[in-house]
Length: 146
Image (cartoon, rainbow, N blue to C red; front, side, top):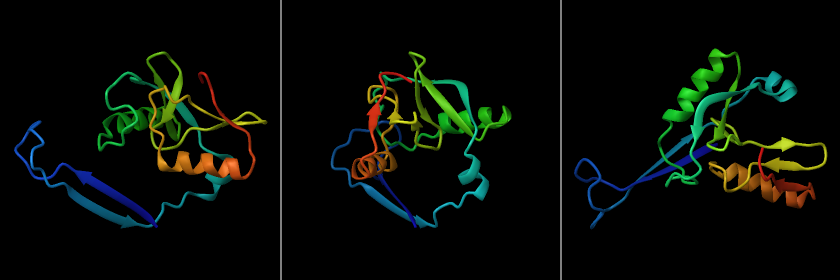
């Protein structure tokens, strides 16, 4: 099961209204986990570095927001290039995240993730994977840059 909890600031005037006496709105949605074709598990996905950049200095870096416009535009660009997934670079041209996937690279000796200072969101799956790797004693590190 996939469970998504969305918390908004609640009902208020339009725009960036002051957050005084606000009652948050909580929305819980439940769905089945997506099932990928067997070929994805056997051959993996193809990826394309897209033209849009993630800004590692932006105020919302690291926050899970409902703004998916960049991810959607990147996915459209990647699919037009024949790829399954979009890879984003930050403003320093380091690979920081994918549009809909967590980004890990297996070097043959260690599992490498983009550095925390890159413009990436460390989601629940990334944290869970990190914990699993510690339990499995799989070397893991954050790359200075990818």
